[in-house]
Image (cartoon, rainbow, N blue to C red; front, top):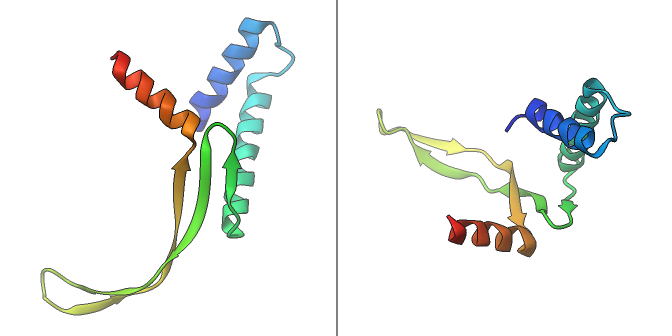
Length: 102
């Protein structure tokens, strides 16, 4: 699902409830701004916790020595930062219940 699809789905939900005060463009901008805030927070090495959904955390992965499989040459893989996602208990139980009903 893309940001555009998320924005469209939110707009449809608002329209069904009669809350049509926001245009599709407004909803798209809100979704875009939300993701921009999440990205900038993660860039600052802070965690993002969304209640009922999960937590995004930035971790530093240590560098390691790797090997080029074609040439056999040893190469050094540098340290890097990765984003980890830990789902909430609520999300895990929802997905587990959905899987059982399929």
